[in-house]
Length: 616
Ligand code: GLA
Image (cartoon, rainbow, N blue to C red; front, side, top):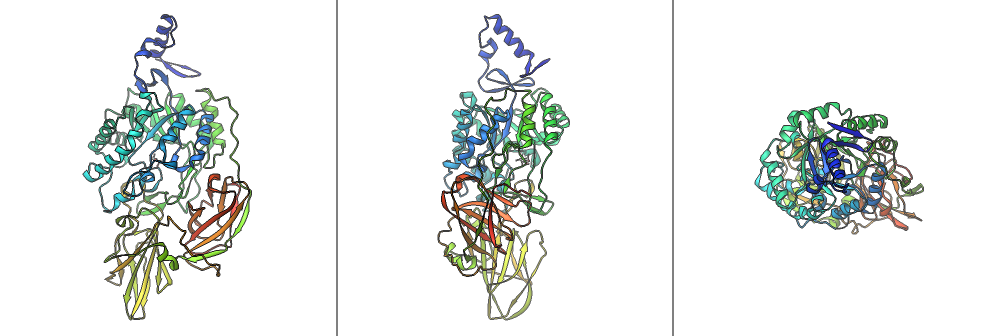
């Protein structure tokens, strides 16, 4: 029997232990507690932390989606909400975009993130994957796994497991001494991610578990899955804690979990309190009052919770993922605000206040006054002064490699950016249909430098008329990827051209391929001539008196990538719903700032710095 009190619930055992403590002269630690293992353990239907009943009131906050100088601010806001734990994935490709030594410095200093949480009194749940989904490019897996575009992923494959083991050997030792079993803040870790939605290879899950144990991870391990018996069965190992991910009314999902795992605590490891957007969709929000009602029911049922997300973030640079709906490719937008209680730019939303009121019944809220919304920039309009057509800059940005047939960027060791393919077609010959197979994701087509069409993977049968009038005509294909699929069976999602280019029924060969990762734009020779049409870099200068959060809008522009002082902020697209790109204060400089925009189609007359976000 369990007894409910304002501070959460105490199991009979814990009450019993407490009374034994009193009987033994009121010692602070009861006999049972003194004997219990350190860290998070399972005791019937409840969790114990260092032997004491503990309700996990957690929220997801991804260190890789928020500027490191804002980590403390966001974690403080999570404490203010009433949370006692922060949960984060580890994005493998954020640390190891290239197949070389992984990076754990600066923004990638994940242990600094964990220590900051610990300083603020938050426990930590780490989900190292290796696959994490998360609407993040390739679900966190590094692009170089797709050197062979059909490489086996997320299963007992020797090459895949060798790569995972090498990554875990670099990553996991950093967490060992931060575990609650050793007096640190990490109370639990996840094995894989919703594996029951992808496969049922328990040997693979067991390999991950054994590798984590071998690397010194002795914390409680769990597997989270959708709330169905099939997903739970396929996605959980019998010796690991099963947890569920869902949104809405918790009654059904918690019943499914209890049915699958009758003798363990109820833990919703992802309570989806918002949702994400794909380009071209409406902006997704969820009702704050309904969210609070559902959370209340969940806590009333004695369950633990991890809000997914507690803090919104940003898919900076090229990091946004994508989904497949049937064969329709759906790229995810740059903002990962997720309609979270704490927004992408740190605002405490209505949802924050309504959920906080519910949490207050189960925990003691910090007494500090609530932090205000982080300071924002005054609005200003910015003119574009200089440009350079991308096709004129190809040889300053890249050295071509030659291949008989087109190959995808991962086969050339490129993780992100654009990729350009050039061949020469013998003529003269009349108009013929050009076709591409294996396109990831859009290709701008040029004949002798003149734009003649566009291919998009969502129109696979689309053709472009091509005429090779002269003895040779140059065919250029500029491929513009928009994020690797991060969920489901279509995970092998190479970027660039992984199939063929056909002119009529002839397969075109002998290609010059230029990788365009666009990591260094300093070689661009901007000119102040009139604004070019088509893919071009444009540069603007923005004067700032006092750096603060800004929101960039591109009225009249179409689609492209933005760099602020050399930092890739992410994509914009007139498709919407997202209108503004979040530019956190720490990326701005006092005085002159440089904005570079790579616009693929048409330029607008100005760029706007706004003082409020517009996510559609
Ligand atoms: C699943 C995944 C998460 C995320 C959510 C949707 O639960 O585990 O990584 O993709 O869906 O936001």
